[in-house]
Length: 399
Image (cartoon, rainbow, N blue to C red; front, top):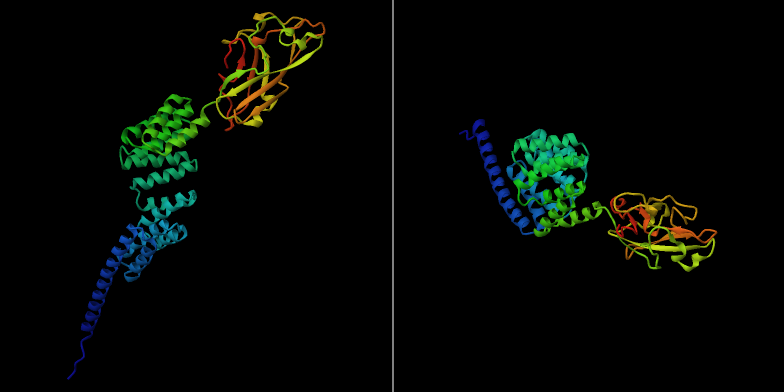
């Protein structure tokens, strides 16, 4: 009696057994995957890595393997092992080349590491697969913005709004780009739109504060700072620091510790400034101390070439030297540059020493109230002083 099975039956039995085995392995893989996700969510990342790898090994061509590999990359990031996270994403790209998931995940890693060119390349590949992903379009726009490829950045942010009309991030990106290009009015318009769409968009509040500060509108910049502070946003410190840099420094106050009488008017005999100047041909050092509104660069402040002493001309509230009378033969000599400057970093004050000369006949006159002290020094950020508050004259008594 021939008990041999037909070849068709053997083939069917093999396929059936294989199918059952595969189904069982996928079921087991799914169970391990669920355990791994639970470990991940409970912060047991080292255990989760082992479980995700096991889930992949049990059914490497299943949907479970896809999810496990995606989670595996995220778990490595939690363990601060970006090298293995990158490898997990690259494995995902190799196994699922027509899915954008792992291209995006890898691009996100490169973005955090500020590897802009690599991130750009991965986002571009993701968009080639799925051009209607607004989030990826936005991320690619940020890469182009960082590279100062402004036209490309604008295109991507517009794509965000095409895919997702009214998307606050799209308006925000357009505002960022306009500001980077120096188009501050348009930047403000876009950022206000982002604010109106998303009432809690802290990044937009900060960027709008930057734009206002760039415009010199520190009142509105301060309003944005107040909004950030009221919401407890960490971005408040960023804006506050930026405003400190952007706000022009000023001469805040002046005084003379050695008694230089800067309020004395035209035709004052120099001997009235000091008894030492009563002698023919004598000279005397005087000083004025200047207090600044923000931290100054010491090397710039003590450079005498950054200070100018001059006689006032009729302009605004400085008045005019000697009431406009031309200097006579008895006019005292005044050096154009100070003799030297001492700067105290703790108090942010500069003592400017300058010399006044008596003439040979001891009858020299001067107009102390109309001597103008102008400062061209830079602040600690390399920015010049406010041009409306960079000089002092005793006549006005104000910077």
